[in-house]
Length: 40
Image 1 (cartoon, rainbow, N blue to C red):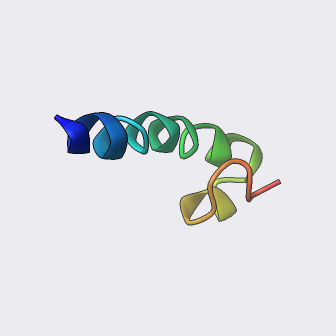
Image 2 (image 1 turned 120 degrees about the horizontal axis):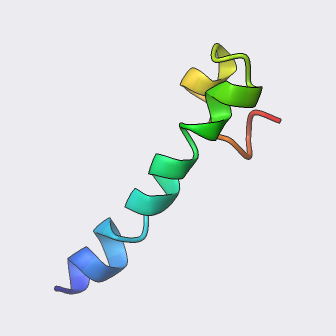
């Protein structure tokens, strides 16, 4: 339970939100390997 709450649940939500908005304003090319906050 500790691994799921502190390891899987934390990184999962942020990763799913980053790849989506990244290609939107990152022209898709950079959004492929660069997350939202890093692209801009």
